[in-house]
Structure formats: structure tokens, C-alpha cells
Image (cartoon, rainbow, N blue to C red; front, side, top):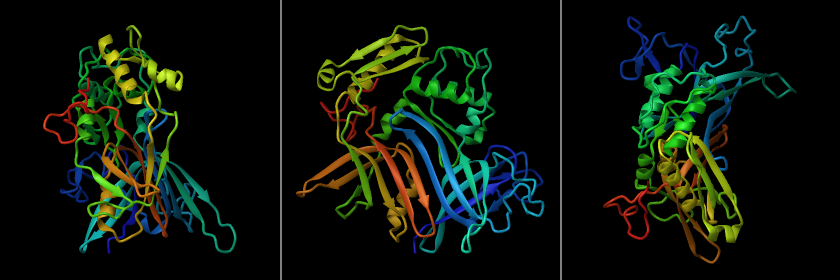
Length: 421
């Protein structure tokens, strides 16, 4: 059987790092799975108490920025073990805000159990649900947020962030900001970057806001992975991801495709941009207008301001790229839902391996027998899990940046693909 089972583990130890810390002279740190830590592990698996799990992480399609990943976990708690005031609880004194928590899926493949993490974050509250009626049970709801919460809790001073000098590549700047926030090196996967940055301007903001300014300046992506790792993609890597081997989802049942339950489509003006202004800090506003699009859809304006690229030309390139990819209305596939409560091993493993910026093809059979195929990036992932069902929803969007990649069968087509700035 390959039906997945959900699991939840809580780590009551201090520090932001996940896993099993290897502490010198501590026999509890397994060599093959641990990392060097400062405190012993204090992990409890509460899988047997799980009643429901909901998680969501990814990019806000309308606002076009990544938001904090969240999880809501409902546990059966008949003895009030998760009440901080219960002195007889085995967790008494440990139920503090921002304790670490992970949600995982176990899949049995040929007798071997494979574990896939789908959320790693921090508990922000323990909400008790008391007995109600004769058939109800006492519960606790754990509200959880990923590492964006920790980065948003760190404020910068008015002076510039140390180590953020002019001329740094964006990846170096991201690491400098993470250093300022004491973010662990073990929870980083940072690309080098393509654009060089101005010196950090200083000012009272959060380190998350400072990081998102670099994300927009690079025209890349910054988010937290299911393992709790801070991931920074530069625009070259985003472009290359449009050339990876895709998974194909279809309602036709054709060989080599994976099934889905439903898709949500839209054809509207929400994502149209034909009047874009991008301004670097201290620079001249770069305004790009596509008049044909304005004539068709009226003005649809957008702007980015105070990005930290060093030249107005880079700001102009960003504005041109946004207008070129967003000036027309297109039939969109906004999301795809998959039912994982089944014995389809390929479908389940693919769903648990999927992450932000994976490229997928979605095929939909239209009335009359025609088919529509959309090539899309996954931009967000949501799981909704109970004992009776497991649904995962992929939020999708067309790639904004597509480079001309030599020798590529999909991204090296003359008159079709364009060279990204």
C-alpha cells in the first residue's frame, strides 16, 4: 500500500534549527540525520493525536510576493496535556510560543517507509477547545508560522546593516542580512545572484522587509522550503527552472501523465499590467507603457520603488520584462487540486516532492474533445488533511522570466523564446 499517512513532531528545544542536534557527549544525536547543535534534542511525536492538519505556503498571486507559510494543527487532547497551566502535563514548562514543529508524510513504497516533510515552522499559539456535548473531545489547535515570522521579528537599526556595502551581488547581500538576524547557516540555500546592489540604505524596518527588497531588486525569489530552509533564487536560476523536465498532469488518463481532481481557471484582467514604473533608490523612474494593451484594456498600472540595483538601465529592464509578460489577458490555470487518499504511488510521491518553482504541464479536456495544455510554475502549495481525506492544492502561474537557453528543446526556440536581461 502506498497511501500516505500524516505525522507531526514538536521540538521543545531552543534555537531555530530543525532536526536532531548532534551535541558533543550527547548520545541522542544520530550521525546520519543530525547537525551540530548547542542544546540536546527534545522532540516528541504527536502523530497519534492528530485530528486535522492544514498548511499553506507560497506566493500571493495578486500581490506578487511570498507570504509566510502557515499551518493549523488540531490535536486530540483529552487530558489537557497542551494546556500551559496543567502542572501534571508531561510538557509542563515546555509549552512556550515559537517552539519548533514539523509536519511530514510517510509513504510505504515496497515495504520501505519514505518520509517527506511538508511544513517546518514555529508554534505561535496553543488554543484549547473544551468538551462540548456527549460525543465531542477536548482538543488543542496549534497555530504555526514558518521562518518568515522569525525574520519579521528582527528590526534593523537606523544605520545601514553591517556588511552590506555597495557592489555586492544579491546573494552576498541576502547572506549578510541573514547574518544580522542570526539565521542559522544550516538553514540556508542562497544563489549567487546576478545584480549588484547599492549600499544598504539603513532605516527602521524588519530583516524580512530588507530581504524582500533584495528579492525584488534581483527579480528572483525568497521563501522558506518545507524543511525550514531560507531559499533565495536568482533570476538565472528561475529562468533555468523553466527548462527542467516537467511532470504532466492530465484528465485524459494518458500514459506518462498523472491524474488530478480539479482545476480552477480564470480569464480576467487581474494580472494585466501595461503601464509599469520601476524606480531604483535615488534613481529616475523608468516608465514603460504598451499602448496597444492600453487601447484594449485601458490603463492597468503597477510600480516597484526603491529597489537597490545600481543603474537605471536595470530598473528599465525590469519594467520592460513585466510589461512584456503581463500586457495581455490569457486563460489562466490558477490552481490544481489532487486527492492523495489513494494507492497511486507515482502521484503521491510526485506531490510530496513538488515545491515552489517546479514546472508542470496541465492538460484539460474541453467540451467537444479539444484539449488545452498550460506550462506553469508551482507558486504555492496547500495541504488539507483529515483521517478521511488528503487534498493538496497547487497554486500556479505562468513564468515571468523565460531565458533563451542554447540547446534547449523548450527554451531555445528562435522567434519564441527571448533572452532575459
